[in-house]
Length: 408
Image: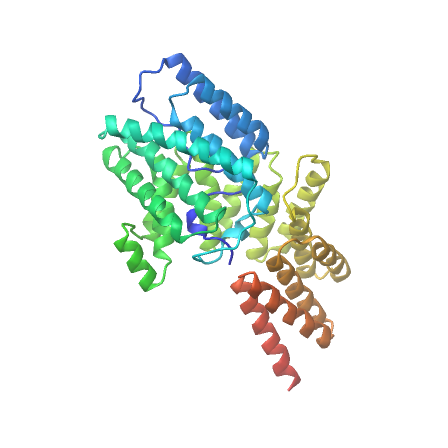
C-alpha cells in the first residue's frame, strides 16, 4: 500500500527504537545519568500523548544533563522523525499495512527539522560507535549502536521513501540487537527490533526472502512475534514502543481482539493521544464490529473537538471516513453519506479518496443506483492505483466486475 510496514514500529505517538540502556559504559556521574533518565521518561510520556514539541524540548534538557549518553540524542531525533511523519499525515496503522515498495514518492520534509534530525542522529551514532569500540563485549554498547541504526533505517524508508537505501542500516540494527540477545538474554528490549524484522522477512515471497537471508536477516513469524511481546512486557523506555508495534503486528495477522486489548492499555496510559481512539475504531472495523467502532469514534470526535493542538494533514478526513464506514455498516445510510462526503472534501491523499469512493459505491449499489455505483468504483480503482493502494484498487475492481456481471 504505502510505505514499508516492516521498517517502522508504532507510529501513533513518539515512536523510536527506544531504550536508554541498562549498563553504563562511561564514567558520567550517577546523578547526571539519573536526571537525564528522568527527563527522558517525562519526554516520552509527552511524546506518546502527541505533545511532540514539548517532548523535544525535554529531550534537549536530558542531553544537557548528560551529553555523553547517546539515548538523549537518539530520542530527540526520533521525536523529530515522528513530527515529520505527523506532518505527512501518516498517523495510523492503516498507513503501514501494505506491501513494501522500493521507492515511495514523498513530499520534501521541513528542511530545518530534517537538518536537526540528522545532527542529533550523527551525534548519537558517534557516541554509540565509540562506546562499542571501547567495550565490544558489553550488551548495551551493541544495543545503542543498533538502536541508532534502526532509527536511521526508519527515517530513510518513511521520510525519504527509499526502502532499498534503508537496508544497510536495517541490517546493522538487526545484527547488533541479535548480538545483545546473545550477550544478555535478559535484555528483552533488544527483541523489539529483532522480532519486528523476523516478522517482516517471514512475510516476504520466496525470492525477496532469499535476498533478505543473504543480507543477514532471518525470518520466523512466531518467534518474531514472541520477541516483540516479550519487549512489551519489559519495563523501561522501550515498552510503549513495543506495545504500539504489537498493534501493527496483531492487525497484520488479523488478531483484532489482541490489538484492541493492547490499544486499551495504551489508552489508559496515554489518555491525551486522541489517535488511539481512531486506531481502535479502525481495528474494530477490520474485525467487522461497527457498533464498537462507532462508540470509539464518537468519543474520539468529541475529544478531537476539544483538542486545540495541531492536527495532521487530512486527519479530519480519516475520522469522518471511519465514522461514515461504521454508520454504513449499521445501515444508517443518510448519516453515513454525509460523513463520507465530508471526508471526501477534506481528504488530502488519493488512496483515502479512493477508499471513500469505494464505500460510497457500495452504498449506491445497495440503493439500486448502479450508474452511480459504477462511477464510484471506477474512481476508487483509479485513485487507489495511482497512490499505490493495491488492496483498495483490487477490492474496487472486484466490486465493479461483480456489478457488471449482474447487468449482463
